[in-house]
Image (cartoon, rainbow over all chains, first blue to last red; front, side, top):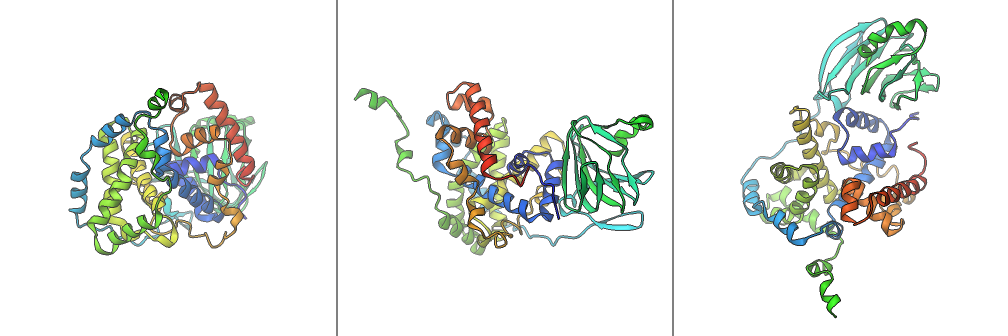
Length: 228
Length: 205
C-alpha cells in the first residue's frame, strides 16, 4: 500500500507544467501507480483548464483593453488558421513499446514517463548500481538506483532535496518501510540511512550531493555525488 | 453622472458576455474536426482558444515570437490530434489545456535546457488517461472539488489564489494587477492556502 504521496503544491506545479522534467517524471511515475493522486491530478487539471479559458476571469486581469487588443492583433490569426488547416498531417498515436533495463540479472520495465530519456552506463559501487538519466538540468541529477538485497546507502543528509520513487522492491530507514510506488521527498532537515533487505530499484532526483554524517562513512563523502 | 461615465470605459462589451464556457459546443467542434477535418469548426475553436492561449503564453515567454509559437503549435496539435480527444473522458477545455501545457513544457525545455527531447507526451500521455479512474472515485464528496473549495474563500483571497495558481502570475505581478501592496498579496495567499489545506484534507501531507 502506497503511503507517501507528493504534496499538493507539487501536484499543482506538475499540472501547470512548472516542474523540471526530472520531478515531473517523478510525479508521473507515482501517479501511474497511485489512483488517488491520479484522480487529484485529473480534477486539478480540469479546474485549471476551465479557469484558464474562462472569459470573465481573464478579463479581470486586463488592465487596458486597448493594450490587450493590440497584443492579440500582433499575430495574424487568419493567416495562422490557413496555415494550420492547409496541413493534412494527422498524428497517429504510436503503440507504446515497453522498454526494459537489467540490473544484476534482474529485468525491470522502465516507467512510461522515462521512455524517451537517455540512460547512461551502469556504474557500480558495492551493492549499489546507478544509471544516470541525461536530462541536462544543471545541478539536478536524475538516476535509476538499484540496490541488491542487503545493500544500503550510508547515513546521510541532503544539501538540497532528494526525491526517491520506489519502482520495485522495498527499503526501510529510521522512519519506516517503503514500498513500490512510494514518493519520498526529503530535504536537508532529514538524515537517513536506507537499507534494502530484499533489494529494490528507485528513481532518484537530487539537486546536490548527499552528505554522509557518521564515523568512517565521512570518508565516503567524495562518493556522495556518485550515488545521486 | 460624470463619475458614471468615467468608470469602466471600455468593458461594456465584456460585461454582457457570459463567463460560462459552452462546453457542448466546443466538444462538437472538436468532434467535427476529428471526423471530417471541418475547417469551419476549427476556425471557431481557434477564435475561442487562440487569444486566450496567447495571453497565457505571454506570461511564460517574454519573447513575443515564442508566445506566438505556443499558439501556433498548440492549435496545430489540436488540428492534427483532434481524433485523440475523447469527450467521455473530459472536457474540451481540459484537453486543449493539456495540449498547450505540453507544448509550453517542451518549448521551455528547449530554451532552458537546450534539449529537444519532447518529453511531455511521455510525462502527460494524452491519448489515454484523463480521469480514467473517475468511476472508481464516483463519490460526490470527492467531486466537491478544488474549485468549489476556492470559491468559498473570501473574494479578495480568491483573486490572489486564482491569479497565482491558475494564471501563474508572480506575487509581484499580482500586486500590480490588483493594486495592492506586495505584503497584502503574500498574506492573503498564505491565509488562503492554510484554509485550502484544511479543506482538502491531509492525504497529501
